Structure formats: structure tokens, C-alpha cells
Length: 137
Image (cartoon, rainbow, N blue to C red; front, top):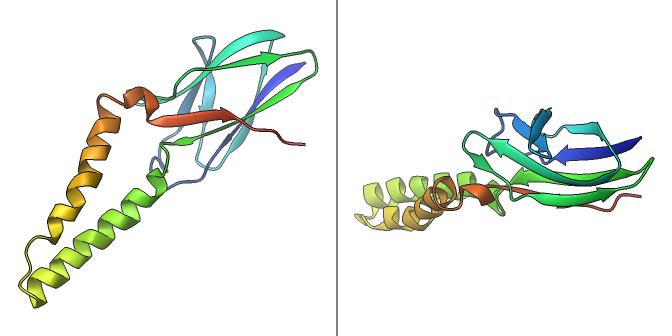
């Protein structure tokens, strides 16, 4: 039996939300944070996509033979795991510097992070998630 095995990375972003998994345009299940799931499928070429809310991953094409398991890894956008700690750190830095050093402009350092998040929620919504084939022995 042909199988697509999906491993979801563990991350802060989307921790509480399950990703919907689509094979050839049909939803076959969901996958939680840090979970690995197998999805049985037929032999041949298939298009796999992951979605969360209105955002998704780019489609990935996999070619599966009989009794073969294709391993895929799905997760949030590249370097997304650093956004929350960096953003919170910059906000704390802003409050410390504005309170004790009379420096009011550190909040502007958060602007690039904010703009990148806006990009992924609008124009880049089909790149919000990543999905890639991995080789596991």
C-alpha cells in the first residue's frame, strides 16, 4: 500500500491550530503540532497541500510506487519560530529604554516584523506554510 507520511514541526506559531491536509484537492485529515501521521493513498502522482485558516502551503507533487512511503515535513513559514521571541524581546527593550533612558524609537524595530507578518497573511498567504519531501532511512 502506498503511504504519505507527514511530520509536522513543533512551533510557537499555530501551536493551537491543526493543519488540514489535502491530497489531490480532497481533505484527508488534520495534523496537530509535533504530530506524525500516515495517509494511505493510491499508486501514482499526487498533489499534497497543507492549509490553516485562509493560508496554505505551496502544492508539492509526489510520485509513489506500490508499498512505498513518502516522507514529508510540514511547518510554518521559514524562520517563523523566531518571530514571537524577537518581537517580545523588542517590545520589552522598548519599554525599558523609554522608561529609563528617555529613548522612544525602539518600537520602530518591531515594524519590519509586523510588515513580514502582514505579508504572510495577505499576499504571501500561499507561502505561510512550508511542505517538503525528506529522506528518512
